[in-house]
View 1 (cartoon, rainbow, N blue to C red):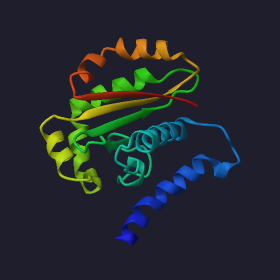
View 2: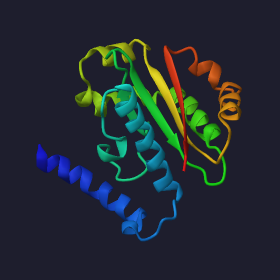
View 3: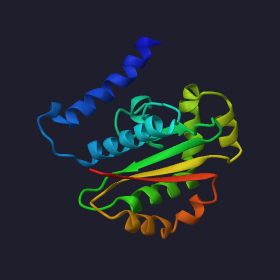
View 4: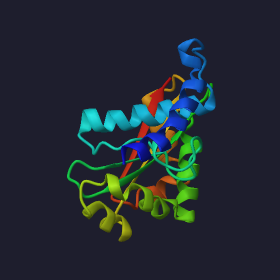
Length: 179
């Protein structure tokens, strides 16, 4: 199993290292920015709010870069809800629109259900998977900000066309990351 994990993760790690230029180039491009937003959001939920710890999708999905589904996944602290996270980075602006649009598109395309095949082995139990299959699940919109105020971000998120759709689910979380 270790050999399989290493074979799958190594190309992604190499891509991330290349994107960061081994630390010598501090410029954040869209790929590295999205990975940063994804990992910062995931770690915040895990470390500060006791959500289930799972690796970002880039590390276990087949593609080494730009996975075809949600960027990260977690389970609520009570172990009931599987959360599907989408991260977006856009330089010089707040990327809430991109994140919320992508989540809406992924829901229509059932990308959340497609992700279950690859994430089931990371689950703490069968409960969040069963709940997700019964449409009891949640979503996370993680996005870069550009010095926007909290109230302005909240106003934009709650005024977005997909907010009403996302608020129908048991839990929707918006995470703004200032890079």
